[in-house]
Length: 362
Image 1 (cartoon, rainbow, N blue to C red):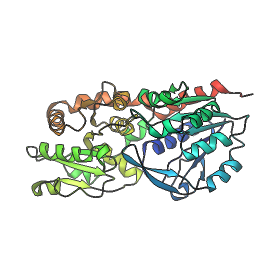
Image 2 (image 1 turned 135 degrees about the vertical axis):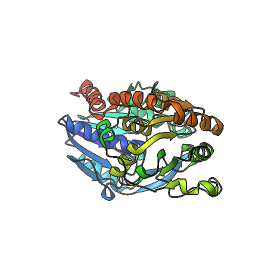
Image 3 (image 1 turned 90 degrees about the vertical axis):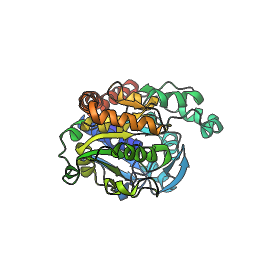
Image 4 (image 1 turned 120 degrees about the vertical axis):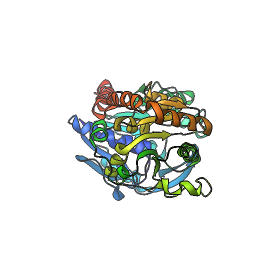
């Protein structure tokens, strides 16, 4: 099967949608598909083996949903989509209501099956509300839709009459489970890991404050953060400065190694998360995962994660202390088992079932 995957976000920057499309592309190749990946900034980064990459030009950082979204707005993408979409049997568009997605859906050949996947979660969306007539027109051009979680499904169905099938995010469970520990991290003692953008929505400050409070009575623990480059002034007492490490962006192989070195993973986002890819990664690597008690993270972690009230630093201090002192092994074992159900070959197979459900298109 010839599949075109369209991502609206810059592949040169980290993000859940970008991780999803990389994993899906690799998973589809493992099932024998020919895959072409379209995304902004692909000329600046690598792509999975066996996948053809076509860059949609550059991207622009736009404030969105409590974060900053690197969205493709380069007009050259219209020409590149026009020239290269034609051979595809299936065009799989991620976030089809963003510019690159809109362009791909509206320029798709009539004979080609178009699948749209929704990733975002929020209580409401002003852009969706304002653009509702256009979005309904776009939705009618798609032959099937999916959403990565019930939370993502709820947002889009609030504004558009569509019925997405739930197909979750995935994880390369084998890669995380078999990676070698990071040599440097292995010298630190017990590692508490934070992986996420250093911004309020991701709860970076909560992770740092909770660690510092827990570390005061536990001299063997260190906090490792990525891709953060520094901690805001005043968050870390001088006595703990040498136990908080900000590594900045790291290569993929080192990210795997750091996960494998970690005892616990903190995922303290305050909300607006449709799913928890980092939760899956932590479980797959054998970490004890503590995550905010929000619907998207429960969709990922099930009963294999310790859930904590978002933004409540005292609750995070207490939960981290309890996990470090007594429960890390139980959580880690439950998480490893659950992560296998989200392995990319399995998720790619479910995605292929969606494709086959709309082929052939007359």
